Image (cartoon, rainbow, N blue to C red; front, side, top):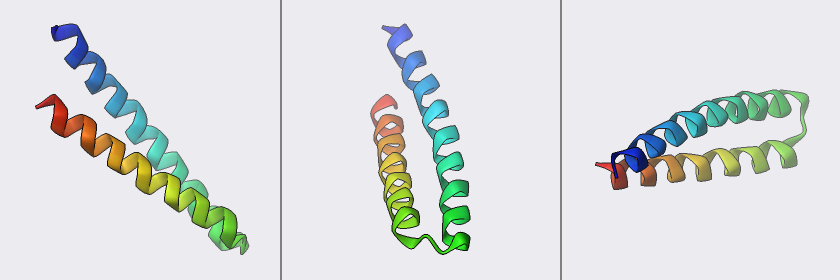
Length: 60
């Protein structure tokens, strides 16, 4: 059972790293003036943040 909790912690770290990459990419697209793509990336970032929050709260 402990293995499951360790895996959840690993996934949280992976998702957080992915969220940071998406955030940087969203900023880049916004600076290029490609607002529809930037908005989709922002939405993805927000959903990843929610997923991370759910994993963290369910793990403790």
